[in-house]
View 1 (tube, rainbow, N blue to C red):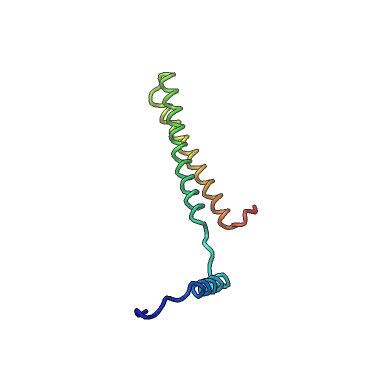
View 2 (cartoon, rainbow, N blue to C red):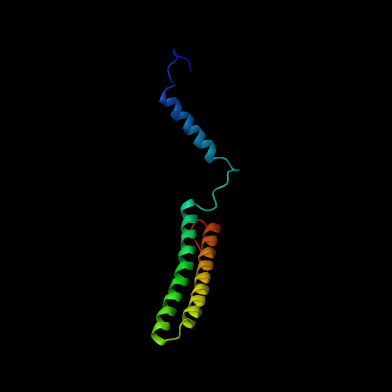
Length: 109
């Protein structure tokens, strides 16, 4: 644009934006995102919390019982392993649920 020309009017810009949106919406080859970013991040956070909570709970209960019963460190080790396994199972279930939601984005199950 040179100095003497005025910028195109906003109505023209609005019309071009509408036309571009209509072309984008009517494009049959356009793929929808598999997961919205919020859902993907939420699933990732849930998996990490499930893993951490299982390990922390198992280790904490084991530590408490070891102090109470005087069996250091055996109960803490055993319950930490069991808590880790439970956390892994919960994380696996959460990922399967996210995968199922990905396959059926309408929310019907």
